[in-house]
Length: 379
Figure: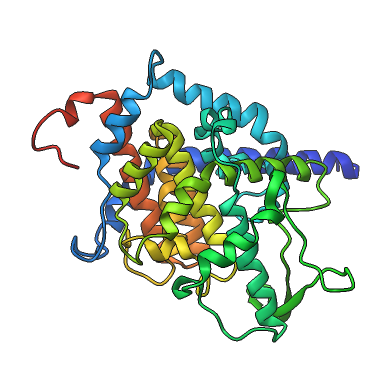
């Protein structure tokens, strides 16, 4: 019998695990079309119930926004930035997904920040934008309200219908100046936190800490870099976010949102990055049932209670589908396993699938601009 020491056994198991996952991934590419056809039998909401983004509006703008670059060069540029720069601090997000694992074959940590790569040209021109970080102030306000609620310092709240929301966010702008994230402290200077019941698959009677800390692992060596990059993204996204929260609830269609983004940033690639980032922040700013103001302003992409999650998933997976068929199959499998099988969240699975189909359509239209040149091509 061969005796492996602990280190060798660990390496051996990792190699075997990676080989198994690679075979599983290659198999998924072959069967993903079959799964997609099978899932199409699920009833979809009618056009009158939801909004459908205009693919030609987006793809035509992206095509023009390529300038002297080819589509492949643009995607490769994003890929390089993700792998060489964003990957250095992406793990500070402390994302815990059971499908990812150590190998990260199906979904890598830095892919959660794909929108940051899209927004790079906007970040390079950050000095030309206003200095008021409205999105950071909103996220801190929502987190602070949540802490107060669980400390019995405030009644049950709903920011989606709060007439004083804008003024309350504005009052916090000084605290988020210079790309800073504040700490909620009491009069004695101690950080204010609370706790709430947590019911997870691994815990039935646990308590979860509620605080205003920015998302991520504070002990991670790259956390401060991640925080600084996130604050810059918040600042870049603030002009569009400010416009959004001034609109009536359920009044903004996706096409209108993209159009307004173009008016502000004049770069369709940056617009897609900003829209996705805003929805990421909105889906993590406090409890979605009480916060998630951005999703409340949007006309639903799909019927369901978790509109903030739908919006973030949709725009995020739309971006990822632009990488092509192989990547789409990988994301399709990840979404199916993680959402439909493990989480048993078929609505998130449906919105992911819808986004991958939509993103693939945009990719096809960029590669074949004539698809949107015909009068009948309205979507």
